[in-house]
Length: 290
Ligand code: GLU
Image (tube, helix red, strand yellow):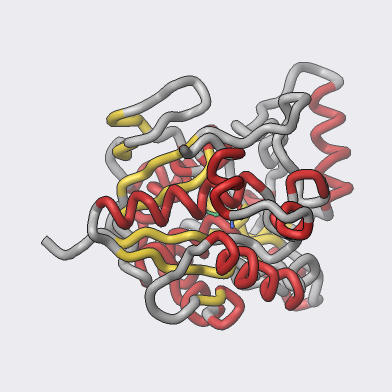
């Protein structure tokens, strides 16, 4: 059997904090224990939020933590053609449709529905797409596309689910409710997720499914906040004929008020801790690893 391949995949849209340190250190520890490799992936598809100085800081902070990675860094912004190819495969299966509503229009549609009855929300608490773009007559769709209007490309969830058997994944960590072992994936809970936009050829979900396969990842170790998103990743893997890695979701590092850390909270930023003279060993203890 070939050695396992892990990955740490930060988004350079802010400085790394203790939560990222836990993820990166766990990946490194688990890879070492399994005689595996760790790859580094920079998830920089959102050009409006990612900045070169944050990417540079990722390298500095990981070096400070004593984490090295194997092979070249994969920067998602350099692989848009791969995501276009994956999207084209889904389009060829008739599973993708454009929706033209703005975010504000979608919010208004959700508000109108919620005035009648509670509207469905995804596992992150965001309302499911409430629109009817899937049923737009094809001439109207063609007219809108030709007009240059902005759009999101969505997965037709019902049609996608009709193409695959029931999906599961192997969880060696735990979900937010303690789920572990063989997990039944529930991608329907996410509704018609966005796969790409007019000006961005991929979403997080599509890029992560394509990249984990392209990099030969066997073990995904990441925070529990992405536990439920795994259902969408499993669905895309099945539709695209990609292998399923093992998953290990780890507890989140919370601030003293029990909230998820944010990239703007300086108290837990790795740069600030370094500037205050802490060591990598101190960070391991702070995140509960030693
Ligand atoms: N880029 C994501 C983040 O920084 C992690 C994605 C993943 O591990 O699948 O939260």
